[in-house]
Image (tube, rainbow, N blue to C red; front, side, top):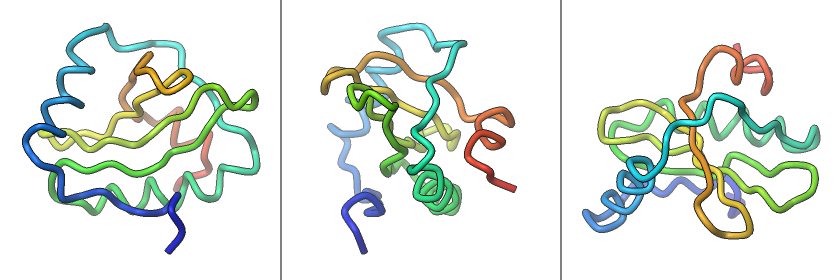
Length: 108
């Protein structure tokens, strides 16, 4: 399994708190980033993988064309899937995965 497809599902309380606190620290973004085309297949597969997880977990989502924004899928304690965006390794934004995102990555 490649590093980009590695599921991180054994999160301890500190890791879960860090993700949840990041999301509480800023408002959810309404305008979403898009992925580079070559990453759509990996992102689609990783999204499918995280949907089957039963607890807090995360997996790589992808990056924008310029490479400065990297995103992960995060399944939260409320069992919803969010995308957390990091700009040059600093938490910058998040949004809930919705039908628009699923269309973007070609998930059916």
